[in-house]
Length: 334
Image 1 (cartoon, rainbow, N blue to C red):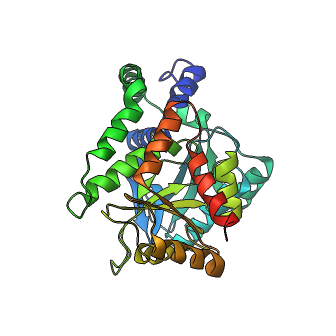
Image 2 (cartoon, rainbow, N blue to C red):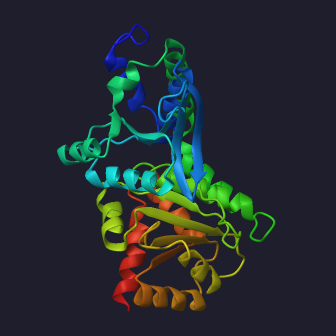
C-alpha cells in the first residue's frame, strides 16, 4: 500500500460501489496519471473489435518503439474463468497491434486454469492490489465524492426510477422523428433492468459500407442462471439489441437485418428487437425460419413488455422472466 490510500480495505470498498462503467473510468484515470504512460485511448474500435484501453508507454522498449498495452477491464464478483482469458487473447491476436503487450485488470481473481492460461500467453494480470498501489489521493477523493453524491441522488429517486422510465417511454412519439430518442430510452431501460449481471452496454458502430445501423451490445459473461443458459444454448456471448420506433407491428425486414450480427464466431446467435407494437405475422414467420434454419434465436419485445419488466423490477422480481416466457412459448408451439 502507498501513502495515497490509507488502507487496502478502503480501496476495495470504493471499487465495490462502482458500476462496471465507472470501474473502467477509474482505471483510465489511474493510467492517465502514471508518469510512465504517454497516452491513453479508451474504448477504441479496431478491425470491428472493441478495445477497453490502449496505453502507450514513454520511451522506446520493443524494437526501439514504445510499448502499447492492450488492456481488458473486467469488474466481476465471481472468479475470471479461462473462457474470458481466451476471448481476450483471441481478440488481441486478431488485432495484431505491433509492439504490444496484454494486460487484464480485474476486481476479482482468476481460476487456477485461467492463471496458467494467462501465464502461458504472457498476459499480465492486475487485481485491486496493483491498482491500489497506483491510485493517487486526488483520484480516490474524486471517486469517493461521486459515490456519496450518487447515493444521495438514489435515495431520493430510487422509488420512482421505474415510473420515470415508463413515463419517458410513453412520451415518445412513434415514427422517424423520435427514433434516436426511442433507441436511447430503450438503452436506458435495458441497462437498468439487466446491468448487472450483464456488462454495461455499448452502441455498436455501423459496418464499413454503412448497410447496418448500429445496435446496442451487452457483454454476457454472467454466471446468472438465465444469462448463462443464453450463452450456453444460443451462444449468446453478447446480447445484440435493436430498437424500432415503428407505429405498426414489426415486419420481416428487421428480423433479417439483425441476423447479420448473429454469427457463432462473432456476437453469438441471440438477439432482441424492441418494437413499439411488438411482432407481426411476417416477423413471427421470419423468426421461425431463422431458428429452424440457422439456429438464431430472436426475441421481440413490445412497449407493453418493457413496462411489465420495469414493474417486475420495481416489485423485487426478475424482469428476465418476460424473455424466458417468450422463448418457452415460442419453442413449445413449434
